Image (cartoon, helix red, strand yellow):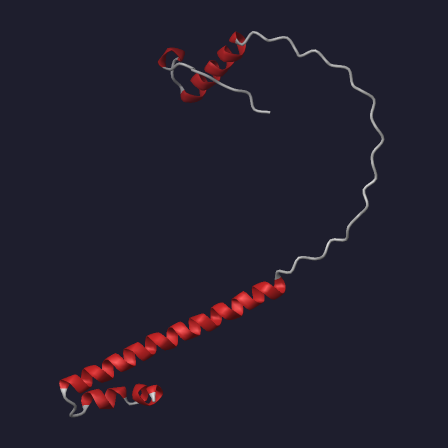
Length: 117
């Protein structure tokens, strides 16, 4: 019945209907249109969800037996490197920043820095 009212919408609204009948036709057509749009969107969502289930299958991984590696000889403790004097490093960083920014070294202060591995 909805499609019939949808096809005859302009004729019925332009005819000698009362205002309440015209509003009824307009609301029926509008609500029917929204229902149709959401039904199609739900169908598309269902199809995409189904495709996701079908094509997103993970391959079965065969269980592989693990073999224990031979024990390595104990590595003697290596002493940590001696702490270096950081003043030359800070001076180089300040000089690089100064050259990059084009400002004198007295215009900023390096508060901290850290090494990235």
